[in-house]
Length: 471
Image 1: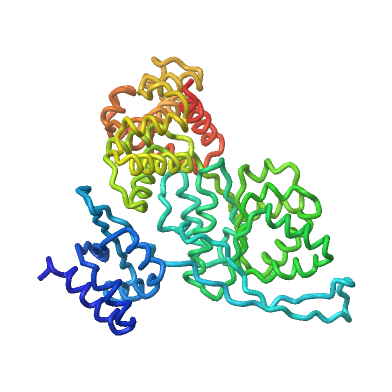
Image 2: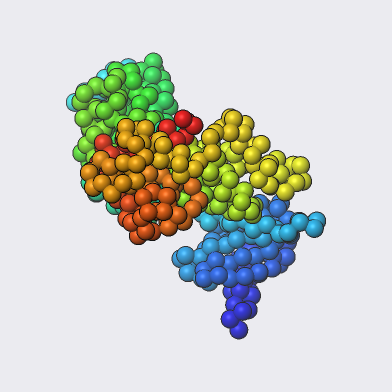
């Protein structure tokens, strides 16, 4: 029967587990598991305790993934429902669903530190196991796509399908702290390793690269240092702005040239755009601008809310819509603050054995964003937009078709939709008596112009900051 399919699927998995595991392992860790539901290719099972869940995730993850995918296909996912020994309702936890594949061992030429290599100096070789330094949590599946990061994620997904063979080489991701630069960069590396296990992928911070360079110079091993990095198939350098010393930049310049000329993929992140890297040599700066530069913006309301829901699910906690909406409205600066507030809320509620309420969320977020900012209203959005463009509200709400007035009106509609939880019809009524289709068109137009027009993107960014600052 269809309603019992989850039982049939799990029984099929148990038969395989029983054949490949030791009897004691199978009886202890798999017999107690009970199937709960099956939605598409997503199977939910009940386990006796949180410790039980953590144990099977740590020691049986690979075999579980293989068996589940064998039964349900490549898109199969497993969720765990943990029922505490109390009157509390059960909580559902997503499975880990994979680890980052290990890099293959590579041969790196090594030279005697006594002399610089010349045409008659033959290098030795050293077998090296390269730790990718990738965190499996930072995968594409855990990214929430929104207008703020859509271009970066889309470009990253394209790169993961054909590393080194797209126009996005190098990929330069920039933006303020906590906007997801590291997550996207690592997700690309993880995606490449999943599709091309034989490629050698390395994630490294610019500060660590600089430290390794200085150590190589002191030990007279600079040639070995360069030879190692030139063996990479994919090199991800985080916080590239920290490569501010001439010697480090010179070494990195040669690594960059070698990898790029050999169609190896390069990915960089920075807290500022290439044009603002003032301490960089011009020859290196021009190469950083070679491929695609993508700015990550502050997340809009819809993306913040979606991120909170996704992270709460990953933490195995079900929060009320009111709590999630409050947090998404209150914290607007970046994903990192939003996640920090969510984890603090969960921890406080769990340790105090209390429900996660809006009142508790207000106390938690107050410690992160400070005093409560001015309430976000349509009137406030209109006022900020009018102040920025130096126009009156009568002009903003008029039927004028002047380009600046139309853009100001469209930005006001876009900002209202992002920051205030109200319908398109309500927004239209508040902003000149427009219908919902006009508001939707305005929001789409603003999103498109932000991707293609730097000046317009600056307008939106400036107004966003004014709204966030409580002016």
